[in-house]
Image (cartoon, rainbow, N blue to C red; front, top):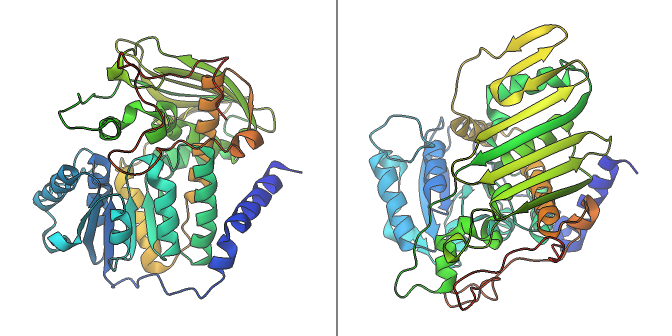
Length: 442
């Protein structure tokens, strides 16, 4: 069975097992707006990325309105609302404006707080939902949005474990049957420098691809100290980047961008991987449970290799980049540079903001009822990163089918501030960490 046939059979089985196809086969409502119709938006997850995504949505062409907001943290929701009304929408919004005026229509009764706030926002009469909560919550929220017939923009990664990936794929069968438009925050797909470079590589600019390299080596995230009255669950959620169950570790939360570029070039996902990683810098309560470095060697079905490296250690070599090596040359994909047998080519096109472009393209698809669904490649690239984490945590060779079938679910015992997270500190305030050769990662 070919890799493509196996993938499609898996998607079919996933959908059937969840009852997705039966549900999706019911009457399909009219969900797209004509070009001159108002599109009402719900923002679910009001941190910096969510605020930026809302700003990009409000900057798209045509009538658009922010109609509802939802978060578990009152301070985050209020800060996001204040930023948007003042026209200050974090680093992702590169447009200059004084605020969004009547494009923001979120009275107090449509500012929802709590664990089920996302349902209230989705059910408030909106057309499109922006899902920018922590990745752990993405599968359940996408599942609900698809069931309710809403167009979706969801940030990467789309899950933190294999059960979450299966839920995303099953929900996406509903979305496709309902003709919903779905964007995923892997914005390089909308970046002209990547689009043109990728086209040339697929047209054979460096010949058959032999191997690829990708990197996300950078700094470590900021840490919020515990406050009086803060429960362990809230502490971890306030420091989400330090906990695998919330973001998947940094090879999933950040490095998925670069991994996705390699999958894009191959039009496939790897079939197995091995890797190594650990904690050379992180120690103590303030550094949670995640690793500070990962290296993974991925193998695709045709034998092509992809070497993946990510690190969060101060004072080291930094790089956010992707490279392709072929029989006839090499490419620095992130720079738009190809050196092949026909000479050197460099992208000279206009520099544009890919964060804005991904929303422009999504909203255009909604208004003109054009095909637009990025959830599948978003899920498969996220799963590729998760499989890499399984390899670095366990020290084992991990195969795609086994990884995707894993039933290891990373979640608290219940969604409440006094709930117990999957990991808790010991008497010294230190968290248990994965130990290669010992940890069962699937």
